[in-house]
Amino acid sequence: MKYFVKNDDREGTCYHEFYKGRWDENKMEFWSDDSIYLHDDLMYQLKLEELILKVIPTFTPYSETEINAYDWKIIYQKAKEDNGELKQMVEELNLWVQKVFSRYEVFTILGI
Image: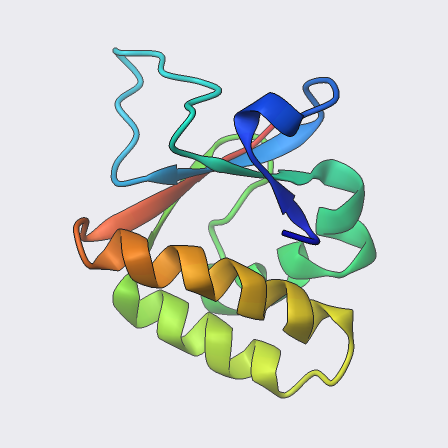
């Protein structure tokens, strides 16, 4: 992967975790090996935060945000309008997202 990393490839803790399914705050399962991670710098440089906010106004990079298939479809379509790296990053994320939606109703972005 070019933009996202697995848990073993993280260098530090400045990452947004893309977690399969609903996150249960009582279990405190941070840094799951099933998750993928996006460095905070890339989140802002490529404007993924802005894209998500257009669809989910309650998104915050400092807490958890669930994304369902309907919202993801809109985010994905909006990203396809961008011809730069944002589109490429979202295409990479979409490969993971489609596998997640085959088993779960949502995925959760855990902020830093």
